[in-house]
Image (cartoon, rainbow, N blue to C red; front, side):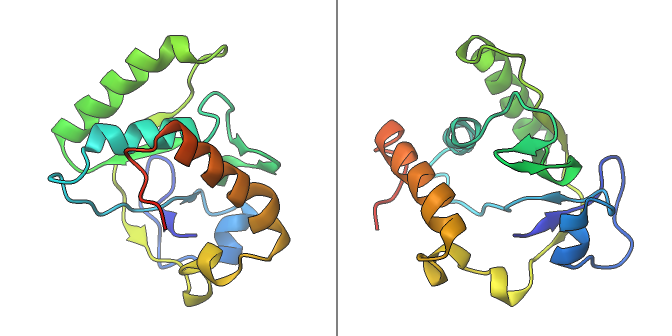
Length: 151
């Protein structure tokens, strides 16, 4: 999984996945999304993101705990920042607990090591993929049939 810089700063050098996973670097495990606005909007991408994980749990996603698993949206310009903040405000009543998703300027993005690229596609029978990712994808496809490309 790719990493983004530490909370409140830029990383020094390029951390490895193992270093990020340790929680000692301050980096977050994230995905950088490149998209065509003629096909999908930034708001739609954020809506899928906010419904694909628990944005109310501080520094945790599922069984994974630590600041590297925090819910965060990194924006690239003021328009993205505004959209992210407005969406979070609009979704406040969707969840029982307060949303803790951070909205921060995009730090330096570090592409993950090659073995993490296309991880789900290349490891569909791996237990984590079967137990966590497959059910999550099925849920998202059901919730957002017009926003998620079927493969």
